[in-house]
Image 1 (cartoon, rainbow, N blue to C red):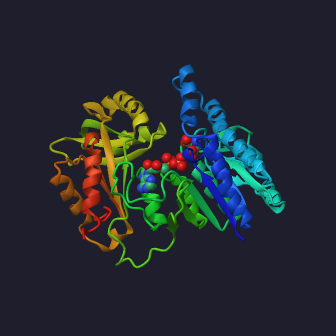
Image 2 (image 1 turned 60 degrees about the vertical axis):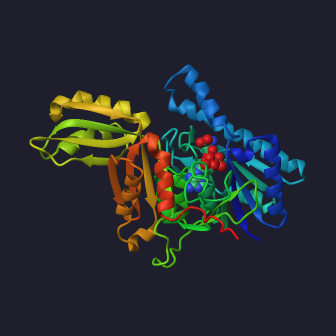
Image 3 (image 1 turned 120 degrees about the vertical axis):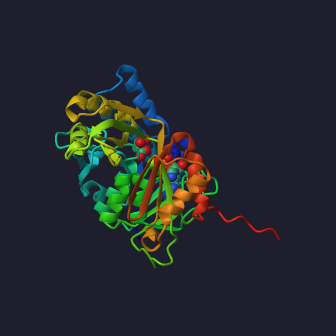
Length: 411
Ligand code: ADP
Ligand code: ASP
Ligand code: MG
């Protein structure tokens, strides 16, 4: 008998019929003797619908009220699932984040979990009940409802699993595991049997939305055994593992991530003097705008161009801040370009294989894609390119690094 935390995403609880199918699945595990805690997302489309309602009132709604609003989506699914379990003769109780007491900081819309009170959950489990927890939400010290950022139910599940020292955390979604890249973009993508935490964290950070970044961080930090599985078809899914295996046998690249959410900001004619990078990025950072890729050209003469990427939603704000500062930085102009995308190849195998970056650049050049920016880390190479070539780039790299599903040989 094990303690299992299962999480069902939006599509998996998208209709009453699907919620009933989830109840059947959970009940199967309960009847096998396991202690079950189930974390649910809002029904698919619901979080977007709620955000849409708020935006009809205000373009930039108050963050506290937005959290009060969007957290309701998960509360609908938690109650429906508990009812579906009752209808099957299974004792179950649902709790929202505040009832469990998932304590977070007060950063509305992107709160971080500080502590989870396990008393209620443990008491219910001891009574033989299935516990259903609303994903994506918590409560701050002052009692305000908070949410954990888009995709945050993954993080609720892993954090609850960590707090309960669960034997496994199973993330059920609409794909049957983690693939070499988003299977919606590259149909030849392959499911991975296992992937290291480090690689999964890098893929999530670079834009693979199959798991929220924070959930992978939690799983790594608290050593929560984590598996991604399909709600709809049985199978082994993908295990996120601590073990790296033999580095010499690791494939060079585990997967490819991409991100369409970034925009490029270029400051032209920046004085080539000490402190200019700080003069530009200091005020951007103070405005709480996160900077991702940075490129500064070597100066030709007295001045240079300084380019960086930020989230698309922040591009206008970053440009406005720098526009004001142009005279003091001694720069000519600020321009933004939102039509860019970032593609990243990720793999611990890079540590033991040389020339991975140049292989990437050659594959892109073979399909005539111009690279605008480059950034690397120990297990990742990212490039910023024109958004319209994103799919072509991902496909080209997927086949260059041997990730495509092998074509069955003809007899
Ligand atoms: P849920 O609502 O269950 O949380 P998400 O939509 O958040 O589901 O995540 C699942 C989706 O992630 C898949 O449908 C797929 O399109 C996308 N995805 C992106 N990258 C990958 C990847 N490398 N492997 C699998 N799925 C991926
Ligand atoms: N419902 C939230 C969202 O759509 C959280 C989640 O599904 O994980 O982002
Ligand atoms: Mg998700």
